[in-house]
Image (tube, rainbow, N blue to C red):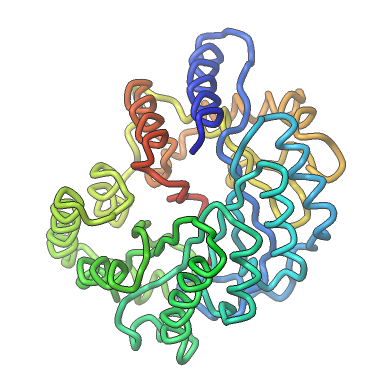
Length: 366
């Protein structure tokens, strides 16, 4: 994270406080998520995307280039977190990543890894993304492949990691590669071993996010029940200890502890700190519709209006104020319930390279 982005982060913290205290709206988006498509080549048991009869219409890569440039012109240096579906299925996506790099826009990618081979690895590294997140459910091939419903996928991912690293060395291109894991009943007992595997496999770190209620399997099979929670908490304690011992676990201690609260379906504590998601986030759907929060209505389309116009529009103001008043109390979002002090601490960690651009929310479906 270079210094310009750091100061943009700090600037927005100040702007948020002004807004929340009835001052002028000087906020700008600092967290930008782009769902490039809904199509996917996995059949994950915890996901509904692959079961959909119809998909949201996908915009062309040329329109996406126009959209990310509009964001860059408004925010200055920024990172766009691309996910799907499976973004590597999108024809021309690697060209979009290259375009982002050429225009000082970080392109963080979340992928299921199925399409990483010698050719795609070479092309992807040459495009110079800012980071690559690979979704891995378990270091045990049988568990991973069963949850993803793709036989042999774990082997493909393991080989893909090696290809990515060797190609980075060959081309002299550096960016971090992370493992992203959704915590569920089938994998929580072996999470510490997954971290060790990730390090041995050449990953730079691991991030964890809890399972969400979505598919029928998340209700019937994959949810961690009340009787299993003591075991889950034991595993989370081990992860925190491993993190303190130097293992590259990207979550904060707090977010790891909150995972068990998520399976209790508790609400986040917001009596002092209102939701700030509408003060800092853009969430873009495959057709260009822009939202401040996936749970709230859209505020415009990035392919027909500029990012500045959308963010500053009366419609955005209405939805932004609605997000601040929201009573949903989402527990698992890196945007909730942080004091200004903790947010500045987060920014300092980002500047010093201790924290990465891995999003822990927004349900990236790689």
